[in-house]
Length: 265
Image 1: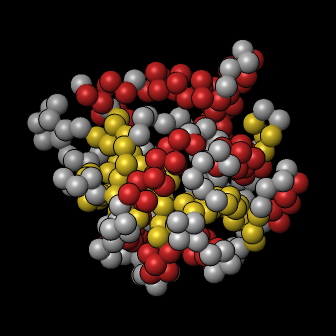
Image 2: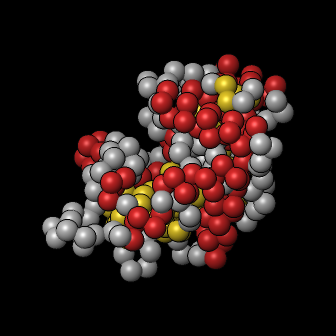
């Protein structure tokens, strides 16, 4: 099964303009993401899809592959649909361009899971979080059925905890694997009220009855959404680079910071 990783990279972020090109340890952030994606052992191609020539030029300068796409796309998945018309694959992985600490083994697990489950239309990742993080609207929560498929995603804490201590929470990690036929269908779907209200593109798929299988991973390091997030990621990576540690070491520290055991309290 031919698998292509597509990294949508929009220059005009409202919270952090020029986000793909911000410097982290002497490299643009998008380069860190591409280099991590290139370590995914079961992917055949890594492509950056951008709407800005500055991003495309930067990617090509460090030896990556970039494709120019429309400035009108509302989401990364919409950008993926355009890429699909230029690059043929059986499976397309949407890897966010603001995740410089993404673990290649998590993406490998996602792709392996899709290979093992030909009945699944879309796959994604999740991990346990505690109640405090569940109250963060920037942490998207997911509720699963007994088959591990997503029932709903929300910025609100779901499920609602009527009795104290009765709920447990899962955080959605925004990496997706789409089969080609599903991605083709996505381009024809209207945006439902739930997607517009929550501003979560994956709700378009659930509204249309598309099955989304969730694969569990260890707690993940933060992405870069705001200037504050950027400084946090810079500090994490710099601390370990100074000691000569690998990038994976920073992820271990992040798991300790997040205290995954707290999700079971």
